[in-house]
Image 1 (cartoon, rainbow, N blue to C red):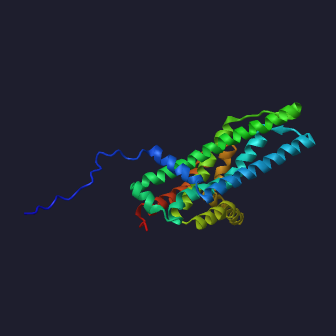
Image 2 (cartoon, rainbow, N blue to C red; image 1 turned 60 degrees about the vertical axis):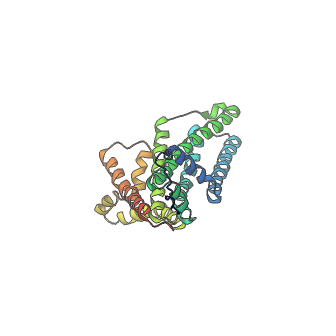
Image 3 (cartoon, rainbow, N blue to C red; image 1 turned 180 degrees about the vertical axis):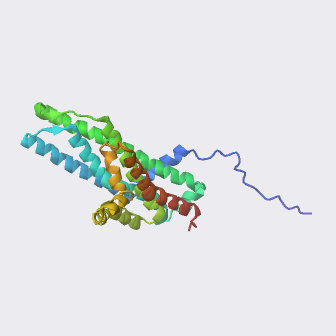
Amino acid sequence: MSTTAPPLHLDVSGTAPIPFWRQVRVEFRKSYDTRAGFWLLATIGILVALVEGFILIATLVQETSILWSDFAYTAGGITSLLLPVLAILLVTSEWSQRSAMVSFALEPRRSRVVGAKLAVSAVYAALTMVAMLVIGVVGTGICELVQPELTEWDFDAKLAIAFLVSQLLTMALGFAFGALLLNTPAAIVVFFIYWYIVPTVLFAVGSLRDWLGDLLEWFNFQAALQPLVDWELNTGEEWAKLLVSGVIWIGLPLAGGLYRILRAEVK
């Protein structure tokens, strides 16, 4: 007389969940372990090296005065142009490379995956500031050895903090566009159109009428960010413009992107 064996069940109730820090470490590795991410970071490094080398040689040859901030913020400005693209790649890579099924199978809580990617963007912003400070020290130190009378070590911690905050917001902007579109080329194009064309269009339209210009200032995130970069965000109106434009261009796209990621069908 045969008996039917009871069905087997895989009990994972006692298995510890994946720690968030491990998820962040995995996403950080994925940011440079692809051809797109690697060459983007390499391009940023090459551009910084070329521009900083040119500034150093020109300073030493012409014997002109140089400030620590000249080296540091030049490097920071170059990285701020291209680093948001990395934030876009972080959030769109799962969908453009069709690896979302693997990622969400290993970690079904999609919000944690997105949070890890956003944390990696913040890590890169912090690393950018550290690299900026190191480059400033190295470049200024070389000039100090050759022409100490023309070299000045001016370090303003407030401007460094302002740069970090602005870099975080810029990375969040690229991340928001990437999350909303989930398509790498489209998100990159939209980001650069917004960052370089939309502010000019808003300024041109606002110059037609005074009341229209005052109204559009609440929609121009780049213009609202400038007082923060200069550490001159002193009035309540400037804070309000930064908050309102940030909600429009970062908050709403990011919320829409999160909703789309959490609800999207993984294929």
